[in-house]
Image 1 (cartoon, rainbow, N blue to C red):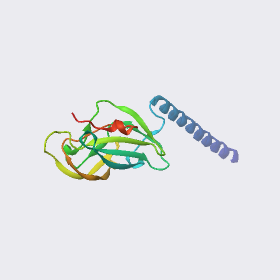
Image 2: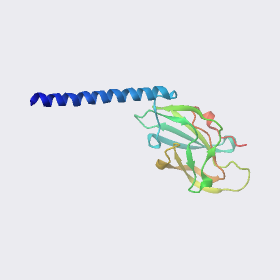
Image 3: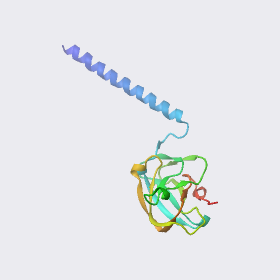
Length: 173
């Protein structure tokens, strides 16, 4: 009887090792085939955010994102999911027409996005003092950030995430 149980335990152990080996190979293949980044995509909760008011291009908010301690991830080069309120008219639209490079975050590395609260040339708009922000695709975990001043919002636009803050200026036509 003892050899029968030992044989069964050995088979379970062998099956577990085989499953780990196959799972590891599948993971390595998926990472190698992605071609973009070897880090995992950032979730909103992986990041800390800072908002500053900038005066260039008629005024905009510079969003700085950094990975929290111990986290390494990447932000895709698309615009953040953001809105100033719950009405659809306060959601940001893209200021850029193409996808930018991914930004790998970890340590002191930062990613930047620029949000212009007003892309129109009129006196219309609604005032807000907070911004709801998340990584695109992670909207259910958005954070609410207090703005440094009150924003008049009318058709807001946002740049993609960039590694260089100079690339995050949302120029309005």
